[in-house]
Length: 306
Image 1 (cartoon, rainbow, N blue to C red):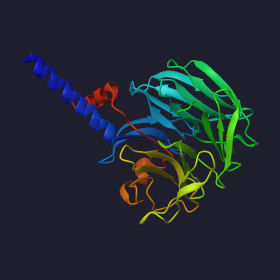
Image 2 (cartoon, rainbow, N blue to C red):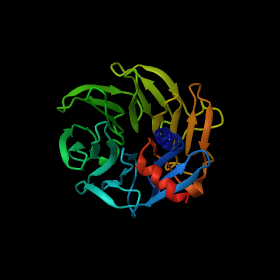
Image 3 (cartoon, rainbow, N blue to C red):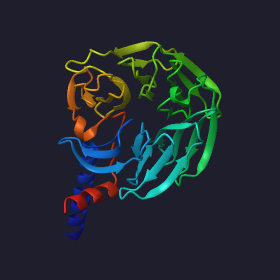
Image 4 (tube, one colour):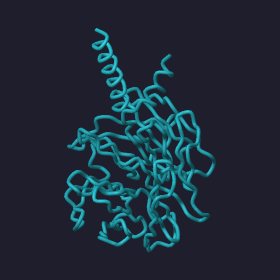
């Protein structure tokens, strides 16, 4: 009987954590004053971390321990949910750190715009384990790149804003491929079939391209989604059900009063199935992370509900 009760308790705990993974999103945005977590179904903020003046957050993530990673232009920082700094990586003056993500092995990937531009890998404790210089033919660091990524084959994908290119380099820094996609790209997400889902930034579009040739197999432009106009297309996440979670960043909107949602989910037919449109509570969103099951976050939610 005790064994059965224990199994039930574990099952209930697993269900609780799984539900939090499906319904809680971590978000950040360039020009927004905080990084926050909210419950997707009711759009309620459950956690928020204030940024300092001048910090610009274009990437957020959470590791398996339930610790929050974010970039802030002058560096990248890993913090606990009670706001304690676990590690803080800073870049040199004149450089910009715009990209920070968690690697599958528990390490971290950072992208630093500057001269030279750099790709840096950190270990689980935040120590540098690898550093590569990247040839970016763009003088202004702010126009070099936003989100870089590490592909399944170990190569790095670098979308270059200023030259409208996507660069792929191997683990030693050798250039493997360079594609001209005719738009400044915020991110290039590797899909299961090895193609790339490209966030087109100020071109108000996103597209799927062949990794080797750059041939476009699918393109969604500004007015292709019924009821929504795409603004600056920032990070896109592909969910387990193949829906797309799209950051519709509005920082370049000259009028400043766009009625478009800041974050939207579309199905495979580009129909909106969910959206977030609350400028007062959430401000601008350029990065989103779907929280995966972890005990730390589940414990945090339990404390909130007591």
